[in-house]
Structures are given as structure tokens and as C-alpha cells.
Image 1 (cartoon, rainbow, N blue to C red):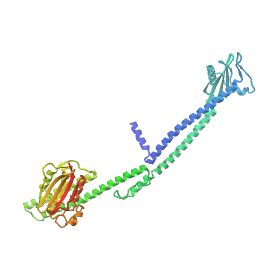
Image 2 (cartoon, rainbow, N blue to C red):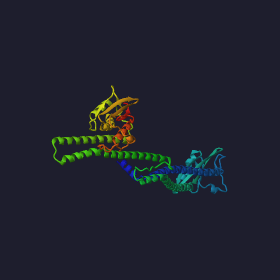
Image 3 (cartoon, one colour):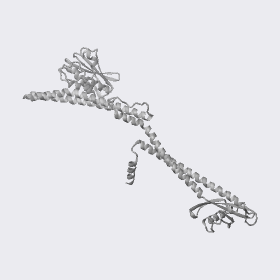
Length: 463
């Protein structure tokens, strides 16, 4: 629970902006680096000052050693003109026996005890000790050997000036570190702000665009490589969104046009039914018309919505396989458009498989079959054949055919050859069939050389 609370506090304290987070990361990195450099610098300085103190003590011990005579059986301390200067902070031992000590040092004081321990060792050595007044004192011992006598000179040096210099350097380095961190943070925020300026520009551009359907794009000119990749990705996303909106607009238009006809039939039949009492046969006929129109509406919705889903998923192929002949025979028995024309299936023996689902095959052929039945005089022929790598389905009628002037507009949405032919369609069937076939990797074509009548050919991948 405590760790969760700590994480929540850290998240609350974390900067909210990318600029603040990057600046904080840079500040933390700089603080760690400067701290390490400061520790190393002050360690080197402290060691250097200690070496200076030791050199001073050795030089003083060398000067004192010149006044100590060890050539005889006993150690003698010679008197010199500078005797008082040399005796300051100097202990002279003959073996373990103390011969001379500084006037200010006491016999049992910490400095004298430390000097005695260094003299007993009989080797050159240095150590530090805390004396009265919380002073730090450095002591170094120098053994003297000559003749039969052995002496040791111990010199002491107050480290207060050295420690004061080290403390001053430490405080100066801390102040300098603080100033450097403040400058680093300010410069980092300035640099990050300048680096993120293109991002703010892109944000302002996106806010000014009226909608995702706009033709405006971010582009790649004058931006860093990372923002070029971001702009390219956003442009691609906007293109996909625009395509989706275009498909939705197309779906809305197709639904509006295609559903208008069956809805008009339903409304007309209901108005006719309410206008005056009807016989049971007339009522039953009206119900059949309404049921047929409702079924047509359901078929239209299924076809258009499935096509919209395929486009939204960017499907380039339709999975599955289907035996073409049974589907054609079922459709020939129940054509969508009521007519006196008869639909027949003329195919050879053997299985004819296409690489689409049965539902998609029906949705592709259904508008073509309905169109052929509507315009045929007596017969519509459905035939299938194999072609290299594909299956071809021909829908042929014996009607008047397509006017030559209208052939170029045959597959354009909303175009009709004769708007006064009594058919209330919106001219979306043939374009829809072609679009569905192309989504499955196939094609729908009109054969202008066929006559009399009209022939449309559906080509689909082989199963």
C-alpha cells in the first residue's frame, strides 16, 4: 500500500508537459554527472593538500634531524641559532625515551601519545589526530640511525588552514554546481521548446483545419526526421479517414436511393389499402407486395452494409469458395425482379468453383440478373465457364440491349438509360455489382458486340 501511495505521489509531482519531462530528465542527468565530478574533484584536492602537509612535515623533520647527533653511544640534541623555531611542534625520541617536546604539549596529551606510538614503530609513518579545540593535526615520524644510537623525530602540523582551503573549495564547487544546474535547466527548456516548436505548429494546423475531410496535410518539408515520420503517419491516417468518410457518404447515398423504391411501394399499398374496404384476395395481394418490398429492402441493406464493411476493413480478397452452378440455379428460380421473362442456367458438367463466398456471389450476380429479367422479352440465360485462373459467368438477355449512347455511362452510379421505363431504381445496381466483384479480385464487364439483347460477364478468381 505504501509503495502504491509513493507511486501516486510521484505521478502527481511529475511534469505534465513533454517539455517539462525532458527538462527534468536532462536536469537529473546533469545533477548526477556534476555530483560525481564534484566528489572526484574534492577527493583529489583533499589528497593533494594532505600530500602538501606531509611534504612540509618531512622538510621540517629533515631540518630537525640536522640537530640530532646519533654518531655516539647516546643521542644528543645540538643547540642551534634557530632552536626555538625548530622545537615548535617537534618531538625527539631516543628509542622510546622522550628527549624533547614542544613547550605547549603535555606529557599525557593526545599529540604526545600519538607521537610516542609513531616513535615506537621505528618506521617512517604519518597519521592524523584530533587535538584540543577540535583541531586536526598531522604527525609524521622520521627514524634516525647512526653509530650505536637510534633516534626518531616526530613533527606535527595543524591542518586547519588546509581544511579551511578544502572547505572553501567544496563550498565554491557546490555554488558553481548549483549555478550550472540552473543554467542547464534553463537552456534545456529553451532547447526543448525550440525543438518542439514544429509540433506546436502541427497542432495549430490541425486545429485550423475544418474537418478530417480537408485536403490539408502536414507534409514533410522543413521538419526533423522524427517529425517527418510522424507527419507521414498522420497524413496516411487522414487519408484513411477520408476514404472511410467517402465510403460512408457513398453508403448513405446508395441506401437512400435504393430504399426509396421499396418504401414508396409499401406506402402506396398501405394508402390504397386504407382508401376503401378491400376483399380478402385484394388484401392478400397487398400483403404480398409489402412483404416483397420489405424483403427487397433487407437484401439491399445486407448487400450495401457488407460492401461497406469490406471497404472499411480494406479487404482485397473475399475468403471462401463456392460451387457456382447451384447458386445460379437457385437465383434463376427466384429472380429479384418480377417479370414474365424466364431465367435458365446453361452450364456444362462438372464442378465450377469460384474463390468467393456464396453470399457475395449472390450479391454480385443479383443486380445483373434483376436488370436482365427486367429488360428481357422472354429468356435470361445464366452460363458459367472456366477461364485461365478464373471463373466467368455470363448473364444474357434477349431484350432491346443497352443504347449505344449510354454504354459509356453504364457503370456510373445514379445513371439510367431510360428514366421513364416504369422502374423506380436509382441506377446503383450495376456499379455496386462491379465494385463488389473488384473487391474480390474480379471484374464485371459489358459486351458491346453481343446482339440482339445484352450480355454482362462476371469474372471471379477460381476457387
